[in-house]
Structure formats: C-alpha cells, structure tokens
Length: 168
Image (cartoon, rainbow, N blue to C red; front, side, top):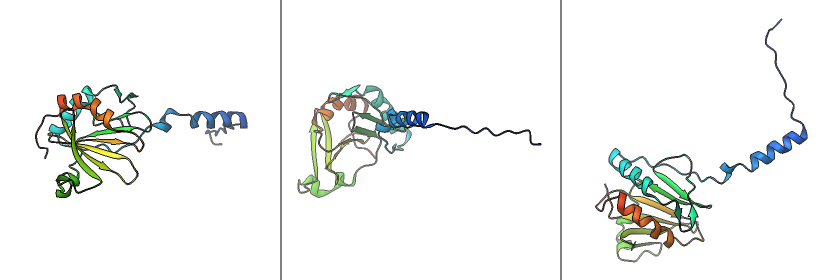
C-alpha cells in the first residue's frame, strides 16, 4: 500500500467567486511594466543618485514605480509617466532634420535648465530624452497628458544627479 495520500481540494462556487474577485482587484493589475536599461557602472551610479533625488509627486501624480523594481526606472500615476535612466542615445538626437527643425515628430528644447529631445510616438504618446547630460534619461508621457509639468518637476533632480556633458 502506498503511504502517500493525495488530497483533493474542492472549491465551491462561493469560494471561487471570492477568489476571482480578489484576483481581479489585485493592485498589480495597474502596475506598469518596462524594460530596465543596462548602462555601465558610472551611468548606473548617476541613475541611482537620480532615483534618490526624484520627487514623490510629478505633475500632481503620486509615485508608482513600474515592474520590475529598479533604481533605473520610476513611474507616476496611471496610466503612468515612466522615467528610465541610462537608456541609449535615441537615433533622432543626431538627426540633422531635428536640429534644423524639419522633423514634425521630433523637437529639441529645454525646460528649467535641462535640454530635451521630444519625440511624438505612433500611439500619440511622447518620449522626452535628456540632451547635453552625461547620461540619457528618458521620460514617456501617455497620450492625452501634457508633459510640461512633469519636465518642470524633474528638472531639479536631473540637474542634481546627471552632470552636464556629452553621454557616450
């Protein structure tokens, strides 16, 4: 005779309904998911310093970091404004059409002492990437949101943690 016993657990309709309801209301449902950049050690250190300097609120939205948790990413609100630090240089940053103002989907500009490249995405969102800093910081703003307030709120942290210069 086998000494192992198998137990069968039956979940009745009321328990199943509660389980489905609880799973459906899980806070993880609204958590954004992003790819974590993989910069070198020097840029990673700057990004960790930036993470410590980031505001708890951005354009009136509370901080809700994306998954997986990382000091190289941050998020605010839902749908989330997402920051990724240590990204690679966007190709449009060296596109002569952007510099000349001839690209309708990419514009260079500055907010409170931080230069940004603004790129309109196909889904109507905007991506902003720092320029003239020793690490690239990318901020994605969902469609329907004005990114100006976010960039104003991020400027002090970027200036504090990411020195001016040219990133590799």
